[in-house]
Length: 301
Image 1 (cartoon, rainbow, N blue to C red):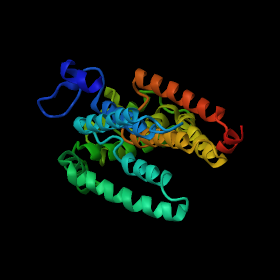
Image 2: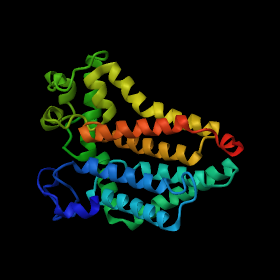
Image 3: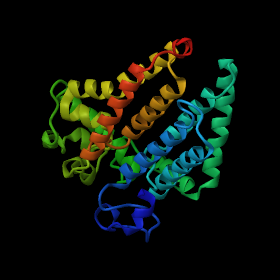
């Protein structure tokens, strides 16, 4: 439905470039969020195959199509948010379905996931261009002089700015705008342009879930952000170790990997609909994991 409706949605606001530039976007959500959510749901569609029992062939085909559409939308947004989760998910998938000898399985999964990742890079001009742009941004960035407003360069500067603001108020934070009183501190003027220093005050914040919450809410912001991500992740790993359905546990792990990686380059809880989705999804995932019994107990019953 998302794929088929995009051409008919308004192409202004977030979708100002629309389909003319080849970059998919809509009025209702920024390309970063559209990209990482599509990628996440695509991966979950693939990981849900045979999760509880063997699916019928048409269900498997439908889920594969869902995965392909998710990847396609993510690529068409040209947003790199979440892309680093792809090799991690490939490794997890291959390890899950690999030999029982886990040392051998790890080795095979590592080799194949690297080969597949390289294959994706070679097959997609969009991926090549975006990776190339990121490498150029990293190459051009300077620690001791004012940097231009490149995508990766600004994110590095945002992280450095966030660390500076956090050190000024580590316990209580600054709220969503209080830190702007220090936007012209000499420590920031050295490496960040005026546009970069004032960008968080215009609403885009720090393009990082961890940095944004640390600056806005101090130590409590760091704690609750870590709990949101790593408490469910720990539950998935512990339940897997207890013998609970490994495909269900892997389903939860890949979801959290996508969110953690995406959270490094954008605020994934910044939009209300996204925060609501994550809240409901995490609650359902944790409930399912806690209610599932180890497989040997299910077999005995």
